[in-house]
Length: 229
Image (cartoon, rainbow, N blue to C red; front, side):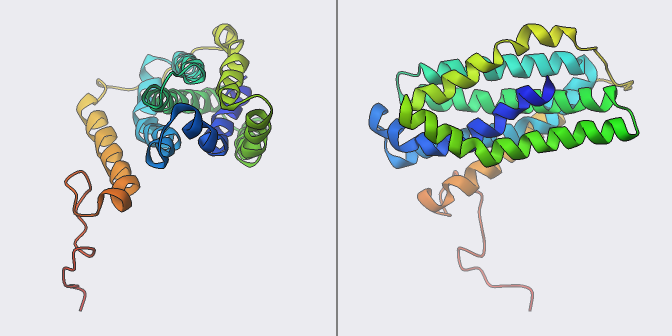
């Protein structure tokens, strides 16, 4: 079940790029805006991985997996019905956060269910293979759907395909880590915001200019002398 759910994460992550042309034409959005349909997903996915993993150990791995799958499913359905580019970008950002929660919760469930030995090796081999297949065939699947039905079908298909996972996730065993002390919410928030800001700067730097206030300063690009010699 974990592998089946996680399969759609790389499919929609890499496949969305195939739909950007149709999205821009349909929603009357420029290139910079449509690129954020892809970038928003990767930004929140990367930013929330650490915090959702730590939180899963405390509130329960099955609960985090189910929550992430639910958020991802809802965001895909919202993206399929998005009336404008702003709503679509917001839905994709929400999908990244949901995908992070489902991925970290799912891997923790596998690690708990297969504590050691060949079983764990096979479980994580299947998990890695699933991610690889999703990354490899995501553009092919997306291109087929977009060409035959339209760009909204990519997100709608992902959301509908995940609907059965939500009730079935209740059948998984719950587990938590034996951790002392409360969650470091300040550290989690600082890490998430810092990684988000860094990723935003890397993405928007070429468009805004490396001296723009929204972009982290880069001394080398402003012509500062090298201090290595």
